[in-house]
Length: 160
Image (cartoon, rainbow, N blue to C red; front, side, top):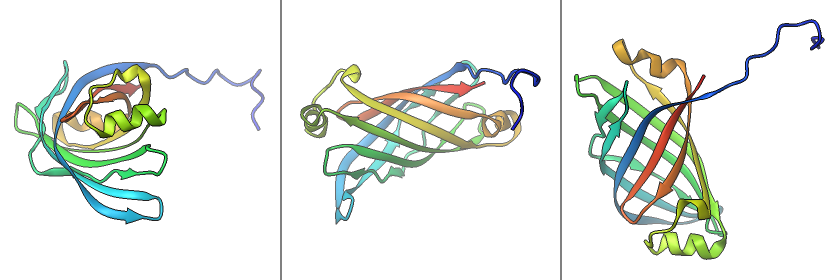
């Protein structure tokens, strides 16, 4: 174990806003009950990624497979891609948690608009990209998200 009084300080991470992501979703389809809840499928049908260094429409035809747990919480698991304005293909994977008071979660499940401060919805994002966008593969990203009736939106931050 290193003595903290003699070693250099460990840098404190900071968050740097990279982009606002708006993911348009298709209807939710139930795949059926599983031991940990109901497995669901949600088509990702598009939406924009807008940031200073990252601008891209999300490609149609990707998906999310979120299990709905008995307490109403969701484990986020998505795989999708985007094609930047200059033609680069970026692969995106997110994992996260959406949970809150059972009454709030029922309202979300019913498609109601719910203030995102009423529930906890956070994701970690990983990217695969090359060329001018290789920097995406060299960072960790986190996001604070919200769910509406037909979309998920999140502010994406690089952990510096």
